[in-house]
Image 1 (spheres, rainbow, N blue to C red):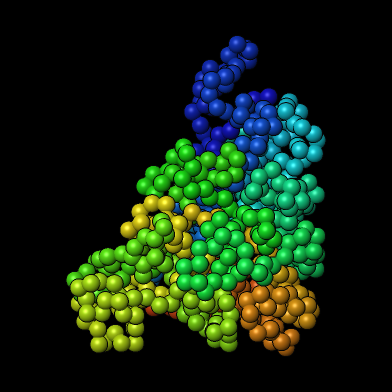
Image 2: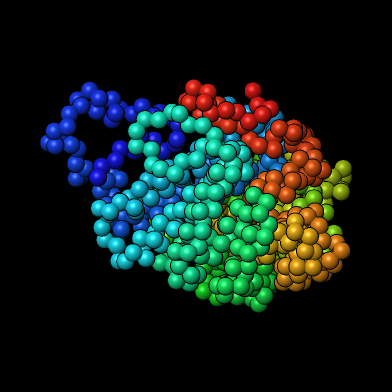
Length: 583
């Protein structure tokens, strides 16, 4: 059967040239029916199970890229708009004041998630099509369907958090359509639950997936627990998280593992978790779902920073690894641009100078003081997550012509430095600040541009989900249920691995849990999603976002939800309504 798919997004450009030509030359004669024999189309690409598999690989590749890579990278855009960070390059310019229906920056999340939904629905159409051939068994068909439903659920989970009621599409759009309206949250959640429950029954157990990086029952239950938290179904959230914790052999890593390049010989298991090459090891029992990046794959097609592609079979793609923006090189004296004049040396192909722990000279996401200092106060010296090899706090002047060359930069002495007119606020926002080098940096594995320590890209795989988050999700549900001892037990599983003091039952609150999520999951979690579901969004932005030019990011009450993009409202003739507070 032939289908015409007219748009990657749900509303834009719905009247396509193909439909114009179809109307102009309308005829039912068989000899006029288009047969895609020598070009790729859905009809021939998804007519067999092997093509469906490639389409699923495309879902993996697309979600990976929009979360971690390029100008659409949601991880960076959303993280500059919460309590944990602000835009270091332009602190006063990227605030909630620019969150408007016409700002294309905030259209990306809507667009990207509906593209993911559209592609999922198209795959589901062919999976359910009786004419699709090549299945090894009915179980394989159900497995592939479960994997596609997982991606659709993932997209709706983000859309509902950021926008509230959103149009629910469960069928592929094959004819021009503009009558999209917002579906009540309860109905969207019901569909998401149904999709994920199917996935939990038909996806493979962890360790039995076709390739590393493919989703499993563990990932489906983890996502289901987060959806239940978002809905306020806390008993169900506990049950889903418990399946992950108890049923599949996952465990927190507590002993050193992998082939970690431990430059300073002070590493620990937390460093191992994020070290190059350790995310997909069979011995890593904490990884639930890992975004796959492959370094220097032949034919990857990347430019500028070396060819890249997905490790998922058939994933391919032109990308250069996830962007990891961090502090700039820094010097004083005769280097007005702020870059180091010399770099360290390479030993056995491994870079070992002062700059080996720096990243791309752009600060899209500079952590707040609450993240860099306040949450560590009680365990500053013993919590391994705050160790110098995991969070870089010490920087050095590196300019042979400067009197300060080789010295530690001490901003308490700023008045005594010969600064040549440098701006201390700019320097501490854009250039130098505590940097999560253990998690997001990747020194010693530079694929290209060694003079910029990799140019801001890393080539190690990234966790979509890991077990520590599952424990904290279940603790959140227990707190909401008033079961504080169980919540404390789950939090302390995570804190014990970090060598941090256990939390007493009487100290367990949502506030404590949110701080623990920063300590464990900063750079990994969707912070805005967590703040919304816990009812802490406005309070935490106003209390903890210390943006020096816009305290609290100038957040307004109506900014809890993002605006529906105006282009989408216009495309429906106003049938799609706007969130309150946005003009």
